[in-house]
Length: 381
Image (cartoon, rainbow, N blue to C red; front, top):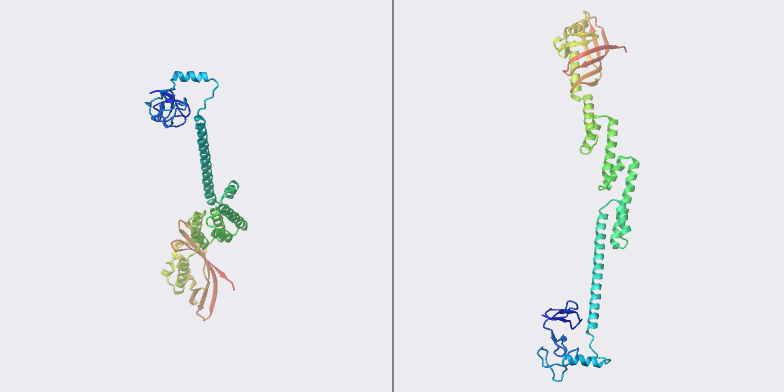
């Protein structure tokens, strides 16, 4: 292996190198050594470009013309010629020009690649921001897209602009609904904009309005309506359940009213028939009766007999009004019933005369459905 100069660029390389690392031309097997001057040149050339000696063939063993100068003679001739200019091919200049052209092409490709990559990244970013803006309900996000991507596709700009206008209109409708303070307006807003960011706030306002109306009515029906409508999201649900129980405990049911009516109907019917057992069946063992504390059942029977004086032929007691009943909880689901009603007493005497009296009855019935208190006030007509 020998070190030679590249015939193309003059760079020092090995004669066994496949190509010149500087200019890229092929070296191994492609160059020969001039037997005259000792320089290397490409096999395809007819003469040595350095000493201009022609050789037959392209091999290193090529015969040299007999009159060809030796290397020493060639050097001496070059020195004696002095100012004689020998034209040599400028292959190095050609190589440099080719390198410049290739470099320029590579530079153009690199710049073009960078521009393409930049444009692709810009388009990808625009598309990402466009998707984010279209899925957002924040006007600031949409406006930021319009400000940052003024050269975006027109269809994107139009879509974002329309979306922004819808949000602004929706915000104005929300303000109008809130200012109105109307349940109907809030409900209409939710129906028109089911995906609105104000949906939960609107539901909370409706819940508050319903609860205030419910408390104002303070009826079992009102509380039940609130419970039915706000079972999932009502912030006053537990309060409504407790209030409903309390109201229901204070409301007299039809069954309770009927039971109380039967108790007093039986009481006065027993006086009419002088039935002692039936008379005391629905009274407590001890009660406040006509002002007497702790009156016994015997006291109630004595009262009945005193009504039937010797001149009384018959007596009829009849309830003449509805029952005004007040229900009061006195224990866990234990209630006391205070009631007021009127009765008429018709007394037929043995002399054929008849008297009619009206009394107002105030009485109490305990949770065991026994009369615990009774007073009678005569009404003068």
